[in-house]
Image 1 (cartoon, rainbow, N blue to C red):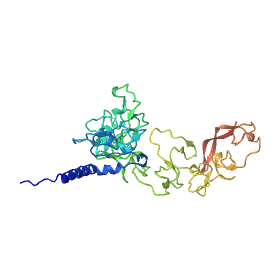
Image 2 (spheres, helix red, strand yellow):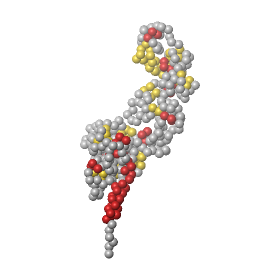
Image 3 (cartoon, rainbow, N blue to C red):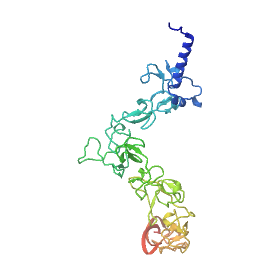
Image 4 (cartoon, rainbow, N blue to C red):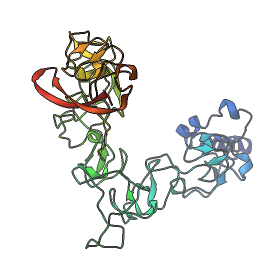
Length: 395
């Protein structure tokens, strides 16, 4: 004979089971769904809890999910309403709407990922191997949907399979590769760390290891600065390495301020040659950060080309005193003569045409040309040789 059921106990057990299921369905997700201070007044069930309407959910999204037959509270898809990031599968809420995730961005479902060539894999947007784009990184494209990176842009340079920089020479899709093939204006951008890749040239930084763009390791052979990640550099060694603190001189390629003797690793520096003539970088490829020039009074200079102005005297940048050797007026406290020696400022109206000057009243002509002219001066470190340089001259 079957025992008599205690319906009160059964009801309590069912209620406990339902509550436990709602709480334990996604415990890790529940922690991230705790209301923020900005949304503390919002109420509702969290992700994983069973529901029958949107109004019951903290995210305001009650849907059938996966193979479950019962509706549960889920995060909002791309384009859905939100009041904080945790409402969204992409974890991105902008002006009340959930945004799409780019490559490697967070997701709950494929609808959280931007474009049509990405899928949601283990909570991150990944390239779908079954929906390959027509153009790989560095290849010509028309729109972002052509590219594995989902970005089609005007690149300043492209990479070959080894990661070496070069011109973007591929043809616009559909024109073929026979003359008269002209370089396409747009190319697919390279992929971020963690993305799937076929070769080193596919990666925006680092190396392609076992099909994934990965960070560099000390000793990796490199052909461009972008391949050495973090504070490591390729430099002149041809291998990724991290310089020790305070070991790099002016104009040396650097990866951090602490590596430079003057503590300043800067981007966009002009180049200065051995004759202390400054040139803007005109290359079309990577322009890596380099150690800054030394100001007057700073130490650790080797030659005048390490200094923003003045000369290098006893390893300190100073304005040259009368009698010091010079190549430009800016090397001297007063004037750099035609003989390459610092000298006192000339008397008014005493300087002949095409001779060095610093002010109009020094010239017999009354004009010290600010547009500069060429003058040959002895080299400070080898006076037996001369060098034509641009400086102020009477005209």
